[in-house]
Amino acid sequence: MPDNRFRPSYLDELADFLRRVPAVTGLGSKIEANGDRWIKFDIDIDHGLAWNVVQELGHLLNYLSLGERLTTVFKPVSPPPYLNGGPKDYLSWVIEADRSANPRSLKELLEGRMPRPVEDASAWATDPT
Image (tube, rainbow, N blue to C red; front, side, top):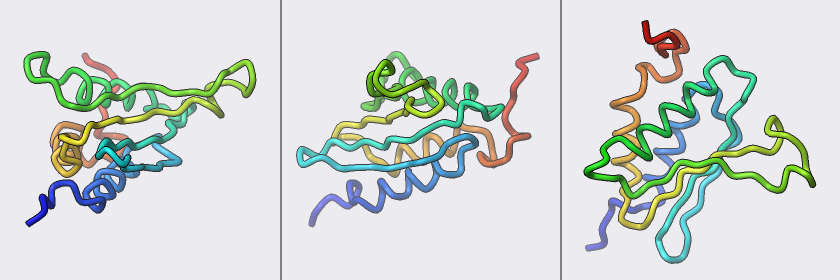
């Protein structure tokens, strides 16, 4: 029986969760022929929680545990600014995961550690004091 952990619908579940995150817009995803996958999206840099979202995703997907690194990378991507324009229109963000990453597990990790409910702006701590 095939391993159902890697069904495309599980990538859709992760994408659906990310759509609920404040400031996240314009989301797209792809599974490569080798099994690697990515989700690319924009973050509205004018949104009051934009950098909080970047910080949360950066921590959870890149450095949650230095001893047990996830097989994901969260990073900015952009075409050449000198040919296109500034970050408001051309800066995007991508979560890349190799084929060993389970999209459902990534969704559950984010859902369990990000503010709850994730779409509620008042649930996001903006002042650590």
